[in-house]
Amino acid sequence: MEVAKSKVIDFALPVVSFDLPILMQHPFTRHGRLWYYLSVWALIALTHTIALVQLYDLPWSLALTDALVFNLAFYGTGFSYWYAVRYINIEGSPSLNTLLTHTVGIGLLVTIAVYGTRWFLGLLFVSRPFYLDVLQSSLSWRFFLGILYLLNIVLVYYLIKYYTLVEEKTSAELNLKSLIKEAELGMLKLQINPHFIFNSLNSVSALTLSRPDKAREMIIKLSAFLRYSLSEDSKAKHTLTEEIAHIQHYLDIEKVRFGDKLNIHFEIAEECGNITVPNLVLQPLLENAIKYGIYESLGMVDIQVCCQRQQEKLRVSIDNAYDPEGVPKKGKGLGLKNVRERLHLLYGGQAGLSVKKGEQRFEVVVEIPDTGK
Image 1 (cartoon, rainbow, N blue to C red):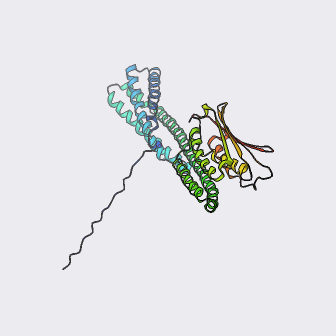
Image 2: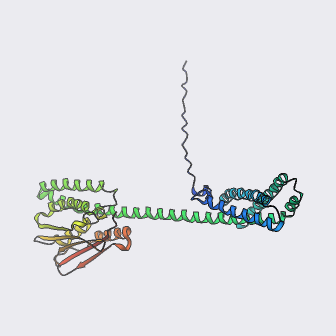
Image 3: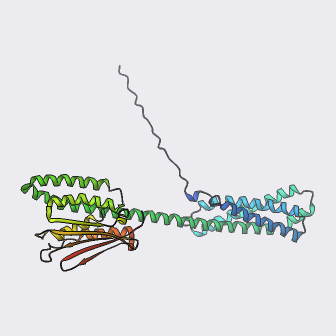
């Protein structure tokens, strides 16, 4: 006889964490606002006391007790009314329903507070018939004051609620814009490596037949370059010194392709080394200079890279000679367009890229603000 094996079912309950949003918190408990709330009610209680003394000729101690009990009741009522305001959605509910809800709520709370304080004060001063007459005759203006108090408190609550919602929406919009900006920068950055890899693989293909040793060397350097690029993907910016070191990886590959035909001179001012620049911002510009300066040239081509700090900005100029008659067909201009768009996304109008094309010289100038970050 076989015994059926029972299956043990393990129910894993999800762990739910509850993070109270800003609007769930009482606005008077944040940023020291409770002291303002207390101060306002203290001023109201003092005014109430003086009014009772002046209008009804009550003793100061009696008037003060009346004012404290009455206003303390509305202090607590007004404080707790926030939770009603919190759960009434103006945007999702018709205005008539909202108005009716507050009318009923305020009327009910004022009635409870006024008659509750009348009952308590009546017990407290049962031996003072004159005061009991004053208490009974003042019910009408106590109702009026109670309604006025709560209406003002509700108005303040809605102003705070509206301001908080605007702040949250503004923050959400800024976060969304930041995410979109990062996505755009990521897309622009991803365009760089495939563009460069395509050209390098073409060169490797050509070298495999004529110079296989150089093809192998170029593949090794290309691998090192890509490994370095991928490791730096998470960094949006780094120092100019790091950018130049990164460019050297790229230039090692190009020197395998062009040998002594490629000659690059760097003139880097000492104060420029620690200025932060966008990652991979100069490599496309050098690639562009090599493309227009070497591809159709028979002799040695010099490329000048000059970096200076001028008026709180880093100025980088890449200058190369070119043969107007031997320049290859115009490409899509991906490199310059890519760099220009990245600079605009990162710095807005504070950074820029300009091109100066002479009869035999081609210069690209990049200006990046020294943000210190």
